[in-house]
Amino acid sequence: MLVVSCSFWLAACGGSGPASSVSSNQDPNAPITVWVDADRMAGVKLYEQAHPQAKINAVVVDRNQFPSKVLLENNIQSGWPDVVFAEPDLVAQVSDTAHNFPLDLTPYVSSSILANFAGEFACEFNSKVYCLRNDLAQNVLWYNAPLMQQFGYSVPTTWEAYEALGLRVAREHPGYIIGEFGDAFALDTYFWGSHCPVHQDKGNAKLLINLPDANCTRMANLLDTLLPTGVLSRSGFFDAGMTKYGKENKILMLPGASWMGDGLFKGTFYKTADHQLGAAAPLKWQADSRTYTGAIGGAAWTVSRHSKNINLAVDFVKWVTTSPKYLGHAASYPAYKPTADVWKASLASDPIYASNPYPVLQQAALELDPQWNYVRFDDRTVFGITVVTPVLTSGGTVASKLAAYQQAIVQLAQSQGYEVVSS
Image 1 (tube, rainbow, N blue to C red):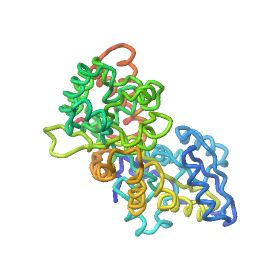
Image 2 (cartoon, helix red, strand yellow; image 1 turned 60 degrees about the vertical axis):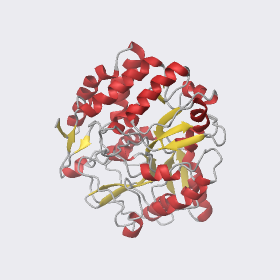
Image 3 (cartoon, helix red, strand yellow; image 1 turned 90 degrees about the vertical axis):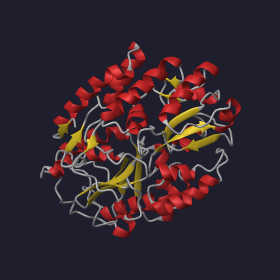
Image 4 (tube, helix red, strand yellow; image 1 turned 120 degrees about the horizontal axis):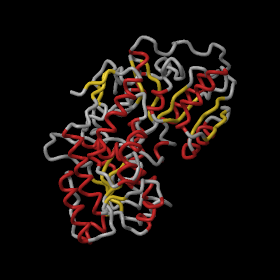
């Protein structure tokens, strides 16, 4: 069980965190409003089937609007949703005094349930659990097994071998790609995968932010070597350019999250043929003693302290994060370990895979960078603005943009009350 340090729940560390009081006007018959994305509506419907007496109003909401919507509702003192599906970094943004949104789930969720969640299972500070993880989003190396065999290539295990193979692909099979650098997720894929101190958690609201570090520049140099060759897509994971690569069977390799097997390669996005998709361990640098991987996504469920039917809201959250009927057959790697065992069987029978990817995904779940952390500012969007977009539009190098990113996130961190250190 991960105990997230004070850098996560900044306000609590400063002694001015959210009030412990919750809505005292409880009504066991009151309906609850649940904010979800379209993919999670299936979970709501399954819960309603299992609990026909429950009254749930499910609304599809862009969860990036979550923090701003809460502030508006605070201003009028009404309209809060009872449950929200969102990434824990968004939950972190609504945990301060101004937003005062999440309910401490500790009194409502037993320790036996909490103990069965995988590493990054919850948003926790000082024994207060503010959300339960829906899924993990650990990165692995996806690859096209038939093409790798046809071209005579071995699946790389290190970043050095990945770079060397990329140069070979550019010479021998131009038009094929081995990754993407077209959106802000490149921060999670490459830099957290290189153990770069983007904002490493040092405890007590202290962050190590040091983009000149060799762990950052080595990855920037790799990207600057590969980008001019064309083997890295300049379109993001969900963009039309990447969809075109997928439909033309031009994705040779793709470092990315565990959910991409079902969420992107399968179905309408990349239209991968059966028995084609392979999963290999996350890449590591030869000099590193262990593998470090980032995560792209991996959302969670949080309950509002303003809910008028907390018991129903909590019961729903517990069910959708632990039910094998739901997550055992969902698209992404469940955070709740007993459910992951059911998901494993479902994955083994999926014809899209060249071989069962579960052992790789299971190991990768243990290799998330231990100093990766949620922060109360949007590091990913800033990375897109200061690094990705300028590189793609101006032709500059990734290495040359790291200083701008460093300056921007240091300012953001300090504005949120963090102490920033560089060593």
